[in-house]
Length: 155
Image: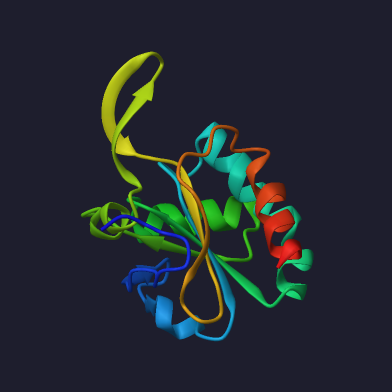
């Protein structure tokens, strides 16, 4: 299933860092930023997560929640959250089923070579559960959270 703006976002339920099940439908009526990243505590992923953290007050003021999804374990997420003071939910997708549903896992170029893995991408889901914006491939992780905030402000 391809992610299309204006269409319903694929439903999902995954475990958070404490093992609690979290579903997209839990946030009905809010904007939801679902961002996919390769691995906790790596340079690009840390810059992106800290970017969302640093803009947190502005994001929350726009009635928005942020959810980060990677294949990492709950233990890895707990350490990442604690180390950087991340105020948002991180979910584990070890079998990459949600990533595949969102087009966030597949073939990509890494250091000039084709490889298969997590594709850094983001989906902005509106209060109605429909995709408002899809960043299919995020090139600059550090700059991306500001672009997401800009899209939120634009309505």
